[in-house]
Length: 419
Ligand SMILES: Nc1ncnc2c1ncn2[C@@H]1O[C@H](COP(=O)(O)OP(=O)(O)OP(=O)(O)O)[C@@H](O)[C@H]1O
Ligand SMILES: [Mg+2]
Image 1 (cartoon, helix red, strand yellow):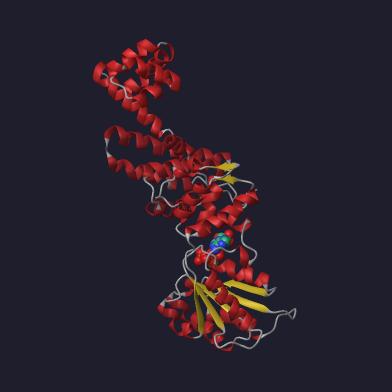
Image 2 (tube, protein in one colour; image 1 turned 90 degrees about the vertical axis):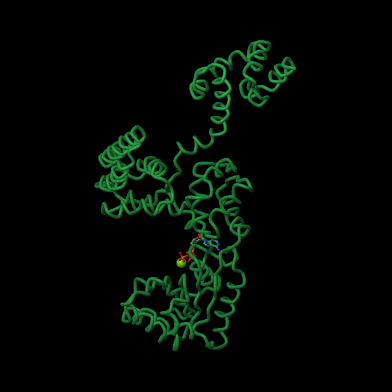
C-alpha cells in the first residue's frame, strides 16, 4: 500500500510548517484574542496560491491549541441553506464537549459561480454574528463576489515559501524516510516547484521511490519544463478518464510533446491497470498509436498525429473496465527517457568520434560510431603505437582518446607517442 507523502508527512504542529511565519503569527494572535473577547473581525480569511500550507496551518493550529476543528469544503456546501445548517449552527453554540472550537470553510473559490450568490451571503451573515473563530480559505480573496465579505474579515495573505524553506521541509521528510539526499538534488526539486510545497513533496516521493540515496543525477534530467503536477493530472485524466473526450482533452493540458507523453503513458499504464484484460487492451491501443508514430517518422505525414492521440488517450481510457481503483498508486517517471538523457553525453562523444572517422572513411558518422568505434576500442586497449598512429590519422582530441581507451595511463602513453 502506498501513502502519499503529502499526507504521511503532513505537519501536525505549526512549528513544522515552513514559510509564512508572519502570516501564521497574525493568525495565531487572532485566534488567541478570542479568549479575551469576541474580536472586531470574527472571520479570518486566508488566501494565496495552491499547495503552500493554508489548510494545513488551520489544522495544525487546532491541534496545537487543542481546539475542535469543524471543517468543510465550502464548494460541497454551495447553497445558502446548506451553509447555514453547517457553519451557522456550528458558530453559534459552544462545543458539544465544552472545549473550544474553530470552524473552517475551505476552498471558497468553488463557491463563486453565479448560482452561489446566496452561499457567500450566508457566510457574510455568519461573519457578523459568529460566537467562535470562523476561518475562510480561498486562492483569490479579491474575487468581486467576496467584496462585502472582505469588510468583515481579517485578511491574511499566504505567499509562496522561498526555495530554502521548501528545502527544509524536504530535508525533514528525507530524514524521516531514511533517504540520503544531496543538497543540490533537493534544491533542484524545491526550485522547480516554484514555492508549491505540495508539488515539491510529490516530486520528491516520485523521484526517490525505492531509493536510499538521491543525487543530483537522479533529478536533474527532469529539466525545468514539464512541471510534474501537470503531467500527473494529465496521466490521471487519461488512465482514469471516463469519456473519450476528457481523455483527449488531457493532451492540451500536457506541457510535454506527444512522444514524451507516449512514454509517460506507456510506462505508467501497467502499474495502474491491474486487470490483465484491461491492460492487454490498453497496450493494444498503445501499440496502434506506436504504429502511427512509425508512419509519421517514415512519411513525415503529421496529419496522422490525430490517430496517435486517439489511440494513446481515448484508447487507453476506454480499456479500463474491470480494474478497481484501490488506494493511491504513484505515477513514475519514464525510465526509458531517464536512461536516454543520462547517456546523452556519451552518445554525443560517440557521434563526434564518428564524425572524425567519417571524414577519412567516407561512411556516415552514425554508422562509424556503431561499427568502427568498437574495433578502435580493442586496438586502443591493446596496442599503444598503433593507437597513436590511428589517433594522429583521425585527428582525435585527447578527450576522445580517453573515451576510447577508458583509461588514464593508456591515454597518456598514446598522447606521448603522438608528440
Ligand atoms: N508550508 C508548508 N509546510 C509544510 N508542508 C506543506 C506546506 N505547504 C504544503 N505542505 C504539504 O502539502 C500538503 C498540501 O498543503 P495544503 O493543503 O495546506 O495546501 P493549500 O495551501 O491549502 O492548497 P490549496 O489552495 O490547493 O487548498 C500538506 O498536506 C503538506 O503535506
Ligand atoms: Mg487547501
